[in-house]
Each structure stands twice: as structure tokens, then as C-alpha cells.
Length: 419
Ligand SMILES: *Cc1c(COP(=O)(O)O)cnc(C)c1O
Image 1 (cartoon, rainbow, N blue to C red):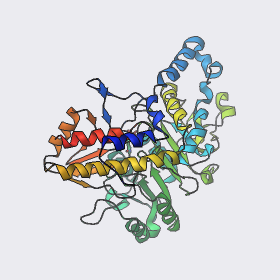
Image 2 (tube, rainbow, N blue to C red):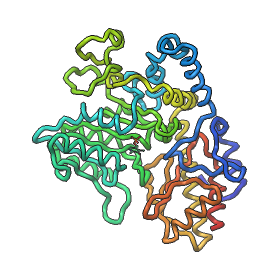
Image 3 (cartoon, protein in one colour):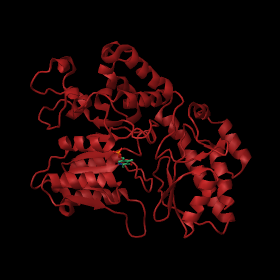
Image 4 (cartoon, helix red, strand yellow):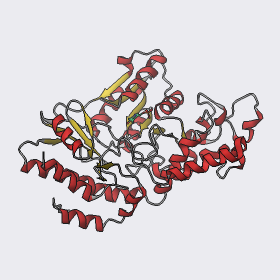
């Protein structure tokens, strides 16, 4: 597509945007009485306007029924997690029994690793990306140590080649191959939080299986961003949060996927709780844990209904649109952002950018700025741009197809030029 850094072009793109109507379903943070240019949907998605009604329903049921709300409420809390199965399955490309909404992301990561990181004295290594999100690094470190292994020996990080920012798929596959039958688990993010690189989850999974290991993914930056096919790719497990691209509020409830092939394996060790016990017997308070079929069998506690009500409001929006449709907009939106950033640098000597996000990407664009980066970033903030600064000098931006417009990007470019 031939982009133009002009108001008319952005307006025309917005007029032809089949998803433009979704923007009005969200609250856009305000700056001096105007919509800010919000580019941090990768960090905290915006609030759907319907959230308050969804929350009110549960508060009203609690007020009216008290404990009976578990069965008599409009959305009985006893079954609450089930109201999420279909929508969640669509978002991550799974069958409804393979997904469950529960806890928070890092908690779910540990729970899944209890089942899927089962090291032996010879097969114990975890292969992961270098520079992974800190929580994932700490999770891998503590899991390795928990099983009695030295971190440096057990956790193998794959790093970019000198002078490069992104990982090459061939290098990832090669490292897996090299460590071969000492690998217990290959654990990657779906989209790298810093560079915005989208990993080839299918190829990574295939290779992990080829050496006899399992493959798990942290989809914090991928869920609601990319069209995923977790089931077809044969991914063993995955976890994600709901507050980034899934717009479900700070610290919102998270998700977990366990492939159907593991759904009914009684030999899988796990940390159990009453909510994962077979539903028909849950309130019989009997001895002997029998897991629910599928991902629901990994639940520990009763549903955090208030947090999940917010998530419901967001998933109702995802029900109205496919990930494919979202990607058909996020692709040109992201390219337009890159175009506008590079165009601004051409006409302003004070601006220098290097895009570190590779071609394989979702909504996010990460750019390395010059020495004046922090000053530039502060200028953007003062002018109503909400983006994300990462030391030492990277700006992360993620226009989101549900609520960002091409006009947002044009306005961003004008603010850049005014620096
Ligand atoms: C955002 C993010 C997290 C956050 O973890 P919480 O348990 O939700 O606080 C973890 N991992 C990755 C890769 C992330 O991007």
C-alpha cells in the first residue's frame, strides 16, 4: 500500500475501515479535552464502556441473593468459568475444553510447569529466548532450582546474532537441536515484549517435539494480538494475561491452555484445588482428587467473579470480530506507524530512529531512539501521546485495531515533527 503522511490520507483510511465503529465502545483517555494518542494497548488495553454494566450485574446479584448467587444469579458463579470457554477458544485457536480463565499469568505459568516441566537427571533443560520478560526469567530460574538444578546449566537462552535485535527462527531451532535429548521444555513468548517480534510458534513446537521435549508459550503479548492456532500447532500448554490486548483491566484474570492430548492424563502431576475437581462432585467434599476434563482441571480456587465480569465485557467485543479481521487492520495500521515515524525523521534533524521490530510482528513497533530519546519521549507525553519508554532508549508503541485509528497515527506523526 502507498502511504501518505497527510490528514486526508488518514481520514480516508478511517472512512474505509470496517472496524472503525469499535472505537466508540471504549473510553479513550483524555488530554486537554481531546482524545490522547493512546499507543500502549500492549501494556494496558483500554476500558470497554460496557464494563460497568457487567460489573453491576454481579454486584446486584450479590446484593439480592447473597451466597445463592452461586446458583440463582443471572450468571451463576458456580459455573462462571464456563461462560468464557467459547470466546477464549476462538481468540487463541483452541477447543473450548482446552482453555480456562483463572488466576494471574505468572501463577498460571507455574501451575502449568508443575505438570509440563518434569525434568529427569538427563532431560532437564529449558530453552527460552534471551531477554525474556523478567517474570518469565524468574519463573524458569525458580522452577529449575526447585527441581534441584543449577540455573546456568538448566536454562538455555537463545540470543540474537551480534548486531541484530531479533532472533532468527533457524537459530532457535538449531539450539533446540543442539541440546537434543537434554531438553525437557521449550518455553518462549508468542510475541517478544521488548522487540515486538512474533515467534514462529508452530516451527518451535514441532522442533521441541522432534527432540522429545514439550513446548509452552507465554502469550501475554500475543493473545488478542495475533491469530493463534494453539490446537493445530500442537502446543502443549500456554498462558496469557487479559489486561494487555484483551482489555480486561489492571491485574485482570488470566488464561491457560492445555492441549487436548493432555486433557485426560491421570499420570500428569499437578497442584490441585477444589475448583479443578470434577464438577458434579465438587460440593460433596469427598476425599480423592479427580480432575475435571481438560484445562478446567487445573483450576484451584473459585472464580474471581468481579475481575472475570470485566473480562466478559471485553470478550463480548472479541465475539463480534475475528482475529483475522483484526489482523487485516493491525497490519496496515502498524506499517503506517512505521511510515510516519520514518517520514518524521526525514524532515527533522533532531529525530533518529531505528526500528528493531522484525517483519514478523503483530501490533507493536519498537524503535531505538538517539541520545535525546528520553527528552523526545517527554515531549510526546506532554503533547498527549501515551507510549512506553524502556531503558536505555527504546520507545514501544502498539496501535490496536479495536480502538486506534489512522488519524491517531497521523496526529502522532505531527507531534513527532513538532519536537
Ligand atoms: C505482562 C507480562 C507478564 C505479567 O505477568 P503477571 O503475572 O500478569 O503480572 C508476564 N510475562 C510476560 C511475557 C508479559 O508480557
